[in-house]
Image (tube, rainbow, N blue to C red):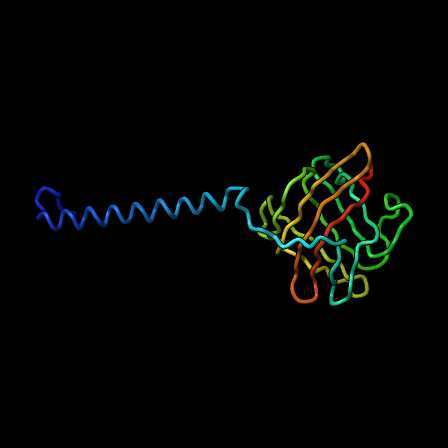
Length: 179
């Protein structure tokens, strides 16, 4: 680009306007990126205020029992299993029959967006269909953990997740936190 001193006044004004316009575009673009990274402006997920339910491989599914435990060898993450089968002792009844929802999640309250990107921040939910052995991996939606009470043995939150046609869940859960 030539030195501005050698430019005519009209060209100087045009160059100045172009630089000013580009600066504005860059500022707006950066502000939008900041909003997307800001937890206050995260997407609004359509959590339904109901018991966690949906469908797995096209079959109706509703949470009747489940448990959250410290992940094997790691006290910073939890392993969660949820079943459509009732249990009198969900902390002892691992691997009940039937369709189930399974996920690992950080042991901290908060909103966890689902994604499948091979990073350590990737968060998914498995919708397991017992009869066919199909693991539908949900990578669209979110899990919000609202309570982790190890003293009273409670784990609460809500989920909205989808893994393609016939595989989606939405609603609230309250299950035992097992030590």
